[in-house]
Image (cartoon, rainbow over all chains, first blue to last red; front, side):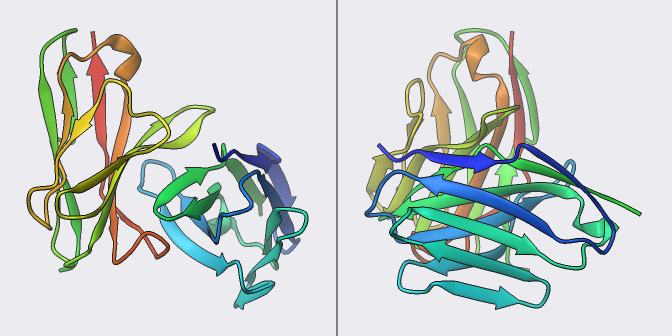
Length: 110
Length: 112
């Protein structure tokens, strides 16, 4: 079955720096790759997603890249702010079955 | 207000006592799903449903049942709960599988 590996498990950056979180997936049939942000005590919320026919997608300070050949996708956050501190999850989906990575705890230090 | 609701939000029960966690959405979504969240393991999909009367196993379906008799509701049933089912449970819905999923507020379940 599908397996999604996410790294690093924790990431600490200074405010204003960039943060990169990487995920690899095993099922080449996966075609949808969302990223969710979960603040402490709250529900996960989608921040950006990408489909297998697209290599890169940007939304203000957030971008996601997808390398289908390597089965690898990454989340890039630029100009990080303290409110970006949260747990971030990547996921890979194929026909409704969604497999999440283990999560990355991002701490942005003021 | 568009939302996904779950009940109860908190539940403490004992081993073997059947329980149901309800999930309801008012967005006319076709797709609904259940996840459990455990420290260090992230979110793991239990069951999902692409439409009424259509359900499929996720990554960790053992010990759980679901039903989808109506579009808006997707209850999670634990016929004989065990302590290893102590977890934080989230229900989610979307228009289709590969689309933005909207999560409910979560249900924290403790099985003693």
